[in-house]
Length: 103
Image 1 (cartoon, rainbow, N blue to C red):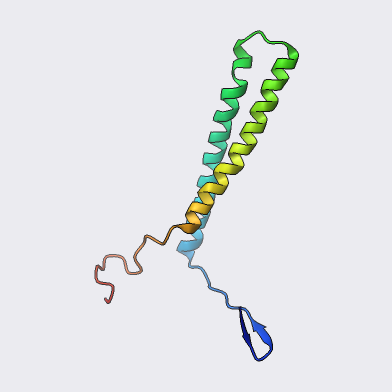
Image 2: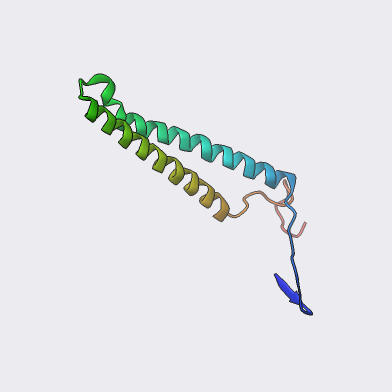
């Protein structure tokens, strides 16, 4: 924000369609991979309940711990993917096919 003569002027950068598409793809990847990691975490913790003869209390404990772990893993994975995407510089050249930056 810049202050010019007592009023604040807001400057916005308009994103290109390619940039908006890249953000959409990255969000989709973050959510899909987070769901996969969360399901794996839940399965590792609560999975043994399917094969073992456990008391009702032990079963509930395993499922609750698995659900808690899955929730934490989901949000952690989503956040790390999106933060990493935000921090990466653009890898695409502004003029595809040109090797000289002055061309």
